Length: 181
Image 1 (tube, rainbow, N blue to C red):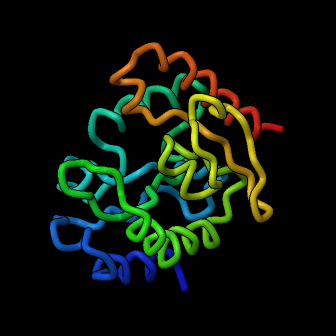
Image 2 (cartoon, rainbow, N blue to C red):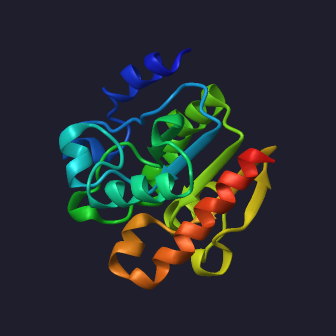
Image 3 (cartoon, helix red, strand yellow):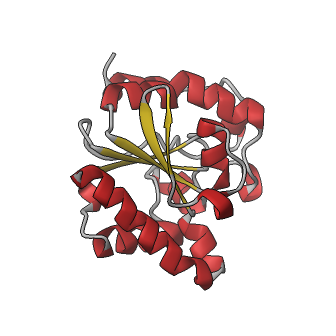
């Protein structure tokens, strides 16, 4: 199965209640051979409207941080643990993200086969590596099932609490160094 075929399947998904209120499935964007994959929590309003990941305020900040770290966003595959926006931007429930991870994200990871996966925020960190507090583990790398993950603050957290911005920038530099080594 190709990434394009998987995206087509996801675009018609009705496996959890999130499909009931979505405008668009936000599958992911980036090169199929990306060395870096970034995984966030869920699409927001702008993402749901456009069908593209991280294009709202958080996405603009994410792009700036990627560029400041000396990388190009077009070289990175970006997605989320769920592909549909939860109503009122609530956190995805376990049933929702487990379904989406099993049906789509695990296959995206397998097909893209990135060297490192950056987990943006608590929800992605917990869902994929089982860790609970981003404040304690941001910038640290973990190997799970032969894959390398790095925990990063979500750009939205840095928008709400600017004190986190320097840490997010430093952690993005750490991600770049992982790729270079």
